[in-house]
Amino acid sequence: MPTNDLFISYAHIDNDPVGGAKWVDVLAERLRVRLAQLLGAEAKIWRDNRLQGDQYFAGEIGDNIGDTLLLAPVVTPRYVRSEWCRGELREFRERAARGAGERNHSRIFKVAKTPVADELLPDELKALLGYQFFELDERGRPREFGAGDPPNHDPKYWAKLEDLAWDIKQALENLRREQDARGREDTSDVGAAPLPLEKKVYLAETTADLADARDRVRRELQQHGYYVLPDRQLPLVAADLEASVREHLARADVSVHLIGESYGVIPDGEEERSVVRIQEELAAARAAAANFARLVWMPVGLTPKGSRQQRYVEQLQTGLGAGAELLQTPLEDLKARVLEKLKPKPEPVAPAGEAEGLKRVYVICDNRDLNGVAPIEEYLYEQGYEVIPSINEGDSTEVAQYHRDSLVNCDATLIYYGNTNQLWLRLKMMDLLKAPGWGRTKPLLAKAVYVSAPETSEKLRFRTREAPVIQNFGGFSPDALRPFTSAIGPREGGGR
Image 1 (cartoon, rainbow, N blue to C red):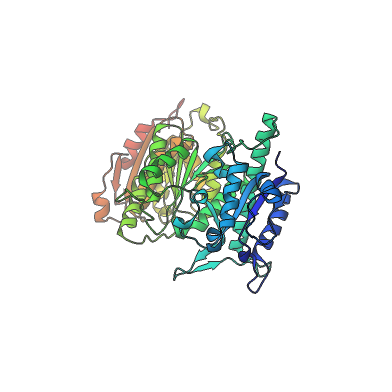
Image 2 (image 1 turned 90 degrees about the vertical axis):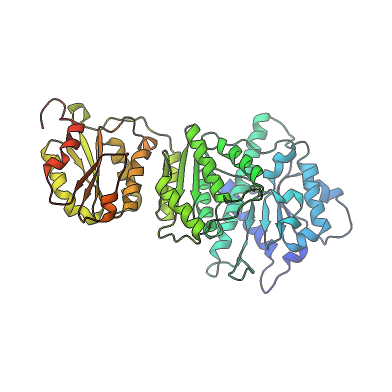
């Protein structure tokens, strides 16, 4: 049974201080403290503090490498040039991972201190997701995250440290749990731990402008106990990329796609689609074949860069398809919605009053049209229907949940198209298609789009087969609504 939990492999020159503390020493100490807090017990972290020379990996060094569950190489230009560091990496794979093959990539945690070109990386590191402790500035120069303590701390450093500690904690728990279940002393062939059942999320790789946002969503999901895929670097050859994404999606219940201002990298062998787009399209195919939720998120006020990204964003906004949700909200709302999707769905309960034949009409409108829609709501109420009004102010998460619940529980829906634009209208119409994914179990008795003043050429040209269109640019007239109310029918057990 391995006696060390984690071996930190590094080039000694990268621990030399540059006007501050020793970088690797600080990382090791912070990992020690944070892992103890997360695990509830001290983690055994080992690293070779001696000067590296010509001695090969025998005796204490080789034994410690082979007697360690996880490896964290601190990757820098010096690390990949060092035969010693490469030897430690090879030795870990050969001794600690003997017999488990490629599955043991999940036992190596690549800590990227400074950038290294992919072609210079050892083969053992090329396919791994890394923990990048730097970013590139506007000139393409790397800026390492500051490792200082509060109050002079760099939030990006501490966020990456938390990601690293959390993933190491989960890997240690999974390895130990599987070892206990097998009742074995030797974990050399444990390999990648099985994914937790019913807790799998595909969080699609995104563009550089949303990398921080993706990390925040990933961190939130992991802290709630969910397993986030992909758990290794996606290939950049189109055929291999698609095969890898399909494999990950097949193990997931929900996919989350963050769409930013840039189109993204186009993999080798592909002429048009970016990595971001390929993942989203494969998730759409997965959703069409089985129970699968798909969430697409864009920042509020997104301004796409370039005509290709602009076309792609417009396509998502107007034709996302059934069973998917498009959110243009603050990031916190996305995190809340993903967590909500992952919760087990309760058994549907009939709304109060349904046994009495009460019929509910959800009237959807923008705040600018509250005055215009008031006569319609009054008329529907007088006819004996329960009117569910639009609520567009308050906590955004609660407002979105109210909208979804209203679409699930209503009997009919009327969308009022007045002072807003056609994009708003199309998004609301798409929500009607998403309602079954939110828990709706029966078809609507009636639905309609009520087109009202001001009269515009866009409204006069508006056509749809999704719902009947009621055009009424003058004052409200009950006659305009009669086809809609006839489709709903009278209240059961009594007249209107």
